[in-house]
Length: 313
Image 1 (cartoon, one colour):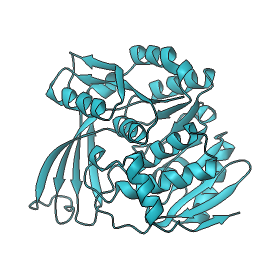
Image 2 (tube, rainbow, N blue to C red):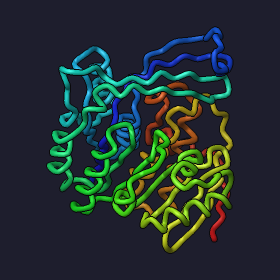
Image 3 (tube, helix red, strand yellow):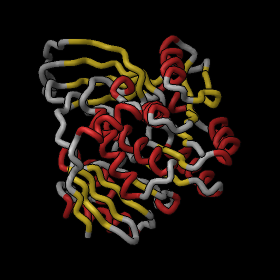
């Protein structure tokens, strides 16, 4: 069984600086890099590096940036036959400022991602019979995300949605199509109107999302850990105490680690534990796709690192 990733491909234009600038302020940076990224492509690369057959469905422009993105996917052994090359628009980019403590600010220009539509949905219908999990994000048109989720539900795929970038809200009709919703604190607050700062407030937000017919809610609380709620179990898993260098792809790494473990037949708890470790490893390196660990690196990390604390309710 395999993973389908339906979503965005961006080239990340990354500036390293001692700190993030204040509004209206100019500061000197330390380094500039062009790094393959985009939430969809990041998740595809991360899943493939963990040893699960992965297919990317999306769109790039007919330009050098698009070629860089396709080459990065191929190097990770992601299947790219369903990535369209659009001659009418530019490849999407993300301008990212990263401070010395790993914090970041991101501006995304969708480009070709904004044109994802019927062609890509056709690819999803074609390849869904060979897959087990569909990974979705929100860097492509929201109406297309909902249609993709509906196609996946019809094909009995598990739908995992990372509601990022943080939305003002999601269509009520989308929630029942989601098997696992994985917001971070900011995104959970945007979706529910609740301030999400710890596991208690995460529980309240998860309860509200369950009422909208989301089956499973996973709220990522950064360095605190992750809160998970299903109809039959609730638990909180603390974060690995790693030194964060760059958090830009941590959420993508988490979702890919979760999907990969579920495809490999692991329990939900074990899948979250793996996702937690993959995300932790990703923040110890700079960049989006370059920071995503291989299965061998993950195994070495797990063998050498004490497991986080688990609280079950």
